[in-house]
Length: 600
Image 1 (cartoon, helix red, strand yellow):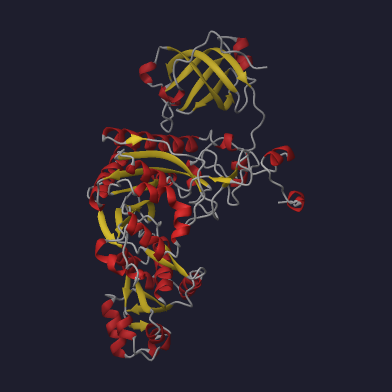
Image 2 (cartoon, rainbow, N blue to C red):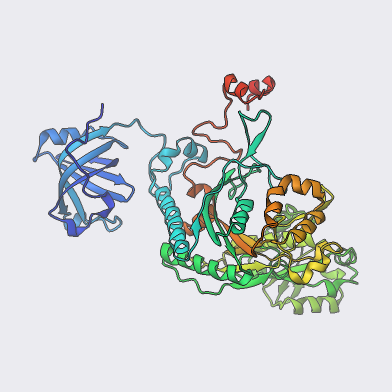
């Protein structure tokens, strides 16, 4: 049984002590990181969430205390009283924040013992993710993980500070709500008191924040949990956190301006980095044509170049055929890569683009002696010269081409430029490029359903100039929508909302809803529009994504305390799990016994 801390009160955290504390009596509490026995001296590294400090136990001072220290093992929880002293000059550790001092122990209490942990509690530990998640409470003790969650906390704290000072109200919206279409799958919650009926966990507070604008609250925000039942990857979780913001009586420029100030404030407060305002803006059309992506990483070049007009009548049928079918031929000039990439490297790039539906990758290596390429013999000298000129090609450059329908060309080349940047190591470190992508298409065509669906959601307002195209040419309608992009990652997105009931009904019709279906699903919102709706708009950020980027992590799992793994399960708690028959009966639910007996 562990000892009590009765009569001891912690005076300092481990990482807070400095040489200014020399001579002070202190009480510290934490976990044993390491114990070293040097004969008559025992050194113990004590850890808490602020850092580490070295404790010294001298056998000459107290044999009992020394013997007690000899029993300490990794991850024991202890309390220690002692005096802060300077280390001997030869013992100073410049790699340790508290490396100039140590605490000479005078009292030790073992509050809790520990079994040998399944992995070392230290950064850069070589351990599988599965083991980390199974023992997540141990993984969270690692200094790196604690720094990550502190950054996340600081971001949330600064968001509240900024918005509170500007008249925003933090208002909670329901977790148990109505299931609606036009999104990912809902997580459903059965109702005990309404047999056969289900609540849905919110994919976002979209409808409720619009209703708050209709209710006159003018400026709302919420740091809110959201839920989507979709296939997972590194930047997706079934439950995630949004910074949700909505404003009344605004247009696009108003929303963008205050959010630029918010993000600049976060960077300054959390990283002490100055972000210039205003952010660069780029239309969706420009982003796709220049970068093949609606979330372009603009820290490096490798931009896409359209060469379709030069090869439309070429003898090279791969190029001319794509143009004749309504597609395009586009290329990237990988400056200087011709001398760096072998034929095997180029072939591997060809295999890479095939994973993005491209049929292949054509290439031209520009050398001091001329061009080398398997496609050069199919191009006239005039076509070749025009291509080289359009791509500003110089000796040493590698030109890479994809010919296909535009959707494939953009996706494959957009991913290829990222892969090239990685292989060429040309992505600047510690640089933050923020920009807005604007004028998204209002609709996108869903081949499976055979109809247009909302690019963002059904409540996004069309641009005024395109309203006349809503019924006749919906594919040409642009939206008052905007995404914020940081270094090739979408960190937030929003729009000006529809606030006119007749326009909202037109939108539902364009999406294939009957009015009966629209009122059945969204009647409470349409009814509210009858009673005076202000123009309004907003944005939602992924707090998990922002925290990961500011912490320098590639996966949002590293900034979530208890994440799910790729199959949406929790390896620590073994959720989801089967439940007792009594609980199911209360909810009027039966489960196929074949499922229960199946080893999943």
